[in-house]
Amino acid sequence: MSELKEAEKFGKIVQRIVPQSRLLRAWSLKGGISAQVTALEFQRPDGQTQKVIVRQHGERDIQHNLHIAADEFKLLQRLHAAGLATPTPYCFDQSGEIFPTPYIVIEYIEGEPEFSPTNLADLTSQLASHLAKIHQVDCAQLDLSFLPQRGKGFGERPANLDQSLETV
Image (cartoon, rainbow, N blue to C red; front, top):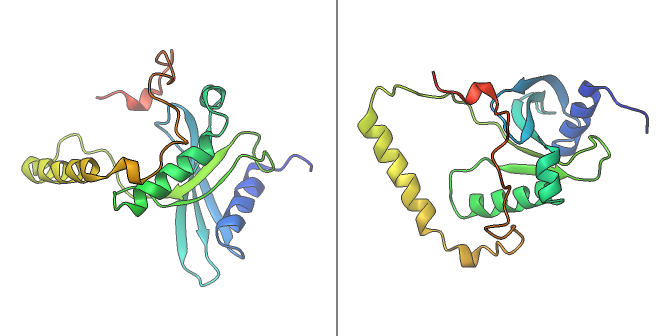
């Protein structure tokens, strides 16, 4: 297959998610440390628009886990099914057919960082509630045996972090 242009590649991904859809736009998102993150907006056959995220895993992650896209997809499926507030996973690909590196496609969730919340008590209550839900999940029932074992992680912190992660 000849080298596809970026828009054609993202258009192929959209077709995998919802056939007969049309890619409207793609834009890069900042803040990723271990992956290239791109948002896609497309028009579904029924005329509705939808946004998704494409996470293309980086070389370092792939070196540590050749199946990182599949593992992330399965983990998100299981956590989402357990009722946790996670993005819906749509698909993953590690074939190299569209991109040379593995990628996962997940739900786009609108939002922005809130460094000075107006209602700190409400925010704290929401965080505590979500944390309690996380701790109530019986991980033994989720079959997470496919995940890398703790202690065999990524080692040292990356030398160059994404500058958008710096707090102001």
